Image (cartoon, rainbow, N blue to C red; front, side, top):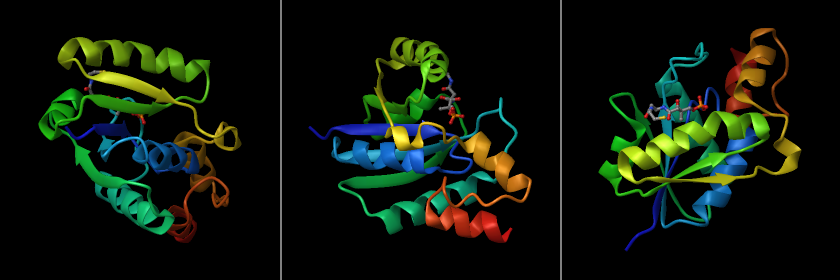
Length: 160
Ligand code: PNS
Protein backbone atom coordinates (compact mmCIF):
# COMPACT_ATOMS: atom_id res chain seq x y z
CA UNK A 1 0.00 0.00 0.00
CA UNK A 2 1.27 3.47 -0.92
CA UNK A 3 2.15 5.78 1.98
CA UNK A 4 0.54 9.11 1.06
CA UNK A 5 0.70 12.34 3.10
CA UNK A 6 -0.50 15.92 2.76
CA UNK A 7 1.42 19.06 3.76
CA UNK A 8 -1.32 21.71 4.03
CA UNK A 9 -0.84 25.42 4.51
CA UNK A 10 -1.49 28.92 3.25
CA UNK A 11 1.97 29.11 1.61
CA UNK A 12 1.48 32.86 1.12
CA UNK A 13 4.24 32.65 0.04
CA UNK A 14 6.21 29.41 0.48
CA UNK A 15 9.33 30.03 2.61
CA UNK A 16 12.66 28.24 3.06
CA UNK A 17 11.23 26.75 6.28
CA UNK A 18 8.32 25.23 4.33
CA UNK A 19 10.72 23.93 1.65
CA UNK A 20 12.87 22.23 4.29
CA UNK A 21 9.86 20.38 5.73
CA UNK A 22 8.44 19.55 2.26
CA UNK A 23 11.69 18.07 1.01
CA UNK A 24 12.35 15.99 4.12
CA UNK A 25 8.72 14.78 4.23
CA UNK A 26 8.93 13.79 0.53
CA UNK A 27 11.69 11.37 1.49
CA UNK A 28 9.44 9.70 4.08
CA UNK A 29 6.35 9.01 1.95
CA UNK A 30 5.67 7.43 -1.46
CA UNK A 31 3.57 10.44 -2.48
CA UNK A 32 3.41 13.88 -0.88
CA UNK A 33 0.64 16.36 -1.66
CA UNK A 34 1.52 19.99 -0.94
CA UNK A 35 -1.89 21.58 -0.57
CA UNK A 36 -2.55 25.31 -0.72
CA UNK A 37 -5.57 26.06 1.47
CA UNK A 38 -7.23 29.45 1.90
CA UNK A 39 -7.06 30.52 5.55
CA UNK A 40 -9.86 33.04 6.17
CA UNK A 41 -8.10 34.18 9.38
CA UNK A 42 -5.25 35.69 7.34
CA UNK A 43 -5.11 38.64 4.94
CA UNK A 44 -3.75 37.22 1.69
CA UNK A 45 -0.83 38.66 -0.27
CA UNK A 46 -0.94 36.31 -3.29
CA UNK A 47 -3.84 34.65 -5.11
CA UNK A 48 -4.02 30.86 -4.59
CA UNK A 49 -3.04 30.16 -8.23
CA UNK A 50 0.16 32.21 -7.83
CA UNK A 51 1.05 30.36 -4.62
CA UNK A 52 0.63 27.03 -6.44
CA UNK A 53 2.83 28.21 -9.34
CA UNK A 54 5.56 29.48 -7.00
CA UNK A 55 5.48 26.19 -5.05
CA UNK A 56 5.79 24.19 -8.29
CA UNK A 57 8.69 26.33 -9.50
CA UNK A 58 10.44 26.17 -6.11
CA UNK A 59 10.11 22.37 -5.88
CA UNK A 60 11.30 22.00 -9.51
CA UNK A 61 14.37 24.14 -8.82
CA UNK A 62 15.21 22.48 -5.50
CA UNK A 63 14.66 18.89 -6.66
CA UNK A 64 12.99 16.28 -4.47
CA UNK A 65 13.77 12.89 -2.97
CA UNK A 66 10.24 11.68 -3.78
CA UNK A 67 6.99 12.30 -5.64
CA UNK A 68 5.42 15.67 -4.87
CA UNK A 69 2.04 16.87 -6.13
CA UNK A 70 1.07 20.53 -5.66
CA UNK A 71 -2.66 21.27 -5.47
CA UNK A 72 -5.14 23.68 -3.93
CA UNK A 73 -8.31 23.11 -1.95
CA UNK A 74 -11.13 25.53 -1.30
CA UNK A 75 -14.24 23.38 -0.93
CA UNK A 76 -14.91 21.62 2.37
CA UNK A 77 -12.66 20.13 4.99
CA UNK A 78 -8.95 19.51 4.61
CA UNK A 79 -9.53 15.88 5.63
CA UNK A 80 -11.96 15.49 2.69
CA UNK A 81 -9.04 16.17 0.34
CA UNK A 82 -6.82 13.78 2.31
CA UNK A 83 -9.45 11.04 2.14
CA UNK A 84 -10.04 11.65 -1.61
CA UNK A 85 -6.35 11.12 -2.43
CA UNK A 86 -5.88 8.18 -0.02
CA UNK A 87 -3.71 10.09 2.46
CA UNK A 88 -3.84 9.05 6.12
CA UNK A 89 -1.25 11.55 7.38
CA UNK A 90 -0.94 15.34 7.54
CA UNK A 91 2.54 16.81 7.99
CA UNK A 92 3.00 20.18 9.70
CA UNK A 93 6.17 22.13 10.44
CA UNK A 94 6.54 23.26 14.06
CA UNK A 95 8.89 26.15 14.92
CA UNK A 96 7.91 26.92 18.50
CA UNK A 97 5.48 26.34 21.36
CA UNK A 98 3.22 28.90 19.69
CA UNK A 99 2.94 26.61 16.66
CA UNK A 100 2.28 23.60 18.92
CA UNK A 101 -0.60 25.46 20.61
CA UNK A 102 -2.04 26.50 17.22
CA UNK A 103 -1.71 23.08 15.59
CA UNK A 104 -2.75 20.77 18.45
CA UNK A 105 -6.54 21.39 18.36
CA UNK A 106 -6.56 21.06 14.54
CA UNK A 107 -4.65 17.78 14.75
CA UNK A 108 -7.13 16.37 17.28
CA UNK A 109 -10.17 17.52 15.28
CA UNK A 110 -8.77 16.13 12.02
CA UNK A 111 -8.21 12.74 13.68
CA UNK A 112 -11.74 12.75 15.13
CA UNK A 113 -13.28 13.79 11.80
CA UNK A 114 -11.61 11.24 9.56
CA UNK A 115 -8.98 9.22 11.40
CA UNK A 116 -6.26 11.27 9.72
CA UNK A 117 -3.11 11.52 11.86
CA UNK A 118 -0.91 14.63 12.07
CA UNK A 119 2.87 14.37 12.23
CA UNK A 120 4.86 17.39 13.39
CA UNK A 121 8.29 17.99 11.87
CA UNK A 122 10.92 20.41 13.15
CA UNK A 123 12.33 22.70 10.47
CA UNK A 124 16.07 23.23 10.51
CA UNK A 125 16.82 25.84 13.25
CA UNK A 126 18.34 28.03 10.53
CA UNK A 127 14.73 28.72 9.46
CA UNK A 128 13.12 28.89 12.92
CA UNK A 129 12.51 32.65 12.68
CA UNK A 130 11.09 32.58 9.14
CA UNK A 131 7.37 32.87 8.55
CA UNK A 132 5.16 33.81 5.61
CA UNK A 133 3.72 36.71 7.61
CA UNK A 134 7.24 38.11 8.15
CA UNK A 135 7.94 37.75 4.42
CA UNK A 136 4.65 39.48 3.56
CA UNK A 137 5.51 42.37 5.85
CA UNK A 138 9.11 42.81 4.61
CA UNK A 139 7.96 42.55 0.99
CA UNK A 140 5.06 44.99 1.37
CA UNK A 141 7.45 47.57 2.88
CA UNK A 142 9.90 47.21 0.00
CA UNK A 143 12.53 45.03 1.72
CA UNK A 144 14.57 42.22 0.18
CA UNK A 145 13.09 38.80 1.04
CA UNK A 146 15.87 36.77 -0.64
CA UNK A 147 17.21 35.29 2.64
CA UNK A 148 13.83 33.82 3.59
CA UNK A 149 12.28 32.33 0.46
CA UNK A 150 13.16 30.04 -2.46
CA UNK A 151 14.63 31.79 -5.53
CA UNK A 152 11.41 31.79 -7.62
CA UNK A 153 9.54 33.55 -4.80
CA UNK A 154 12.37 36.07 -4.29
CA UNK A 155 12.39 36.84 -8.04
CA UNK A 156 8.61 37.26 -8.05
CA UNK A 157 8.33 39.42 -4.92
CA UNK A 158 11.44 41.51 -5.51
CA UNK A 159 10.23 42.57 -8.95
CA UNK A 160 6.59 43.24 -7.98
O1 PNS B 1 -0.35 27.98 6.82
P1 PNS B 1 -1.55 28.08 7.73
O2 PNS B 1 -2.35 29.32 7.44
O3 PNS B 1 -1.18 27.99 9.17
O4 PNS B 1 -2.47 26.81 7.39
C1 PNS B 1 -3.63 26.57 8.14
C2 PNS B 1 -4.54 25.58 7.40
C3 PNS B 1 -4.96 26.14 6.05
C4 PNS B 1 -3.81 24.27 7.20
C5 PNS B 1 -5.80 25.37 8.30
O5 PNS B 1 -6.47 26.59 8.42
C6 PNS B 1 -6.74 24.30 7.78
O6 PNS B 1 -6.50 23.13 7.98
N1 PNS B 1 -7.81 24.70 7.05
C7 PNS B 1 -8.75 23.74 6.47
C8 PNS B 1 -10.15 23.87 7.05
C9 PNS B 1 -10.53 22.66 7.89
O7 PNS B 1 -10.50 21.53 7.46
N2 PNS B 1 -10.91 22.94 9.16
C10 PNS B 1 -11.37 21.94 10.11
C11 PNS B 1 -10.31 21.15 10.86
S1 PNS B 1 -9.07 22.06 11.65
